Image (cartoon, rainbow, N blue to C red; front, top):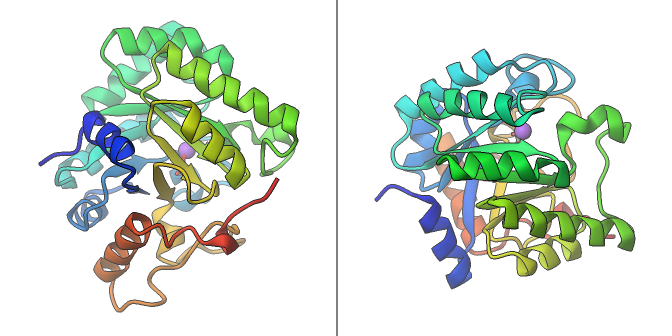
Length: 264
Ligand code: KIV
Ligand code: NA
């Protein structure tokens, strides 16, 4: 049965962890979905892992639409989430138009990076039939504001602010929350505070789901390897086995381990 937004809610209710991976093409979308990964993310991380840029900022709508349509063709029943690239949701009107393009290309929900300023945008999308994932914490489109890729929400004031933002964005209509590079304890508090399923990356093991960039979990990433990454191909003999090992590790909550996690 195809995964829907309701499937993710059921996982949360039952306390069962679900898995998410990025894919950018039809072949990997098929392998990833056949391995039992619940959500495929067409991440704007493709700007880095496919295009070789040093940030996600250069990614365009046309590129996201192209990769989303490729993934949709290979997908076998996963929920398809597509990133809205940098500055394509700066106004409500732009967000509606651009989200519609991604939905037409085969996305089932879109992901936006930001805080309370996104309330009106999320509400407008949600009201018009576009489910939204709100990405908080280390939002890579803000790398120039953060002055680097840094763990977010480390002091109590910032932590409380993030909890407040997650609650406000859920109230505005966000169906899913994604937390990147936040202390595990904060991610656990946010996961408890909202009804929406929470996906984590570098956010500890208490979130409802886990996500990794495909290249990272296959160990083919060149350059700096973030703390939260695990190479699942290292202990297995094929890509298919590595994907299956990831799904199992997430379900059994053996990944992420302590060594992949940040403290406040
Ligand atoms: O673009 C991406 O791959 C992402 C994940 C790292 C969450 O946004
Ligand atoms: Na992204």
